[in-house]
Length: 457
Image 1 (cartoon, helix red, strand yellow):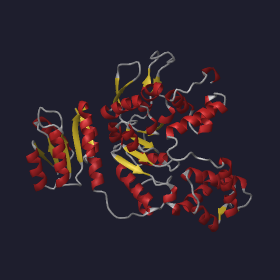
Image 2 (image 1 turned 180 degrees about the vertical axis):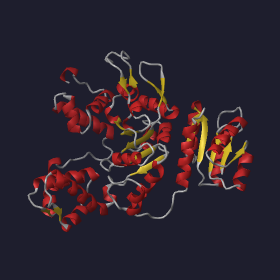
Image 3 (image 1 turned 120 degrees about the horizontal axis):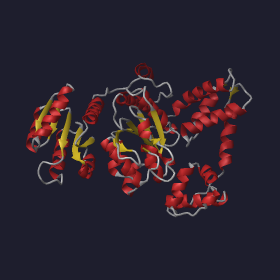
Image 4 (image 1 turned 135 degrees about the vertical axis):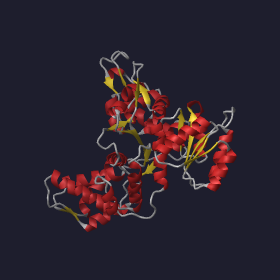
């Protein structure tokens, strides 16, 4: 049973008909008293509610009712209905425990996707599941791991993949966020459609609209021909927005509009296009802290994380290290024509005890370097240890400043200035030495007002 709470009879009727066509049973309430009574008398599986019940659009009544709903049934999923002008109210509602929000006039397909996703998660089977069971149901062949945390993550991916719910993937660098995004796509109904990857950290704010939505010839000075944007390329498929925490405030607003309305306009054209895409985002940054600091929009955060998938760091799943190493070695056997290649049990045990701050990416690089350099068919502890120690020696010992003496931003400015000075203002080389893209460095140079000579680049 789905409970619809709205003082407008037209809204209640429309939602009842829409959900009824999908096979859902509904019950309606026009006031707080009716809603409370319905919750007490019926087994309600999901609530769809407006935030305003009078001419007063402050949302105060809606917030009080949401609090009452949460007290009566803490587990029931809640979808809020709001207008674009009152998105802030929806954000407040999410803080009080709502699961999602849709804007008036709502998109029927988008609303139904949210309903199906939340009900699917609500009925997700409890209890442990084996890797063998998961592999029978889903296509996870690219993902290696049998740690309980990974199995739970894969089970959640399997449950939400068939929906179009927005997903936020979090985790440290090198944990495999892109692989998880691909798994979501490959197990979805959009699997035969495009999977478009976008590294937002490499797109400057001035080029965001052109890159994401496309442009027509003459839209700006250097627009010599029409360009199709990433959202249009991903039509009917999935768009993967990596490093979303790097997005500047102005671009965040533009992205929020697309995710909210599911429409966009090509730069230089007034024609509106529909964005029929599944949106998956990823970041290694703490977006909640960024919201508190004012560098990331709270309403955008709630729009992209209907489902949040956290990938555990490699140090949290050490028993998966032998599985990963053997998988890497199997691929490298063919690549480097070493069919007899093996890793000793002692070497696997030694690797399990090491610190890999770079996670799976660092482990993979270590294995490949060892395979390339070692002349042995059976790789032992000494083979890996030599390459591991060598990589540490190359990095050297870094003397970090005392805690509290410098902010992270001040440290970043110092490193950028040092890299630019060392490479004589050559942006490409400085960016490579800092481990970021050229565009990402340009953005930071502009952000921190660090001068550079365009002629040198």
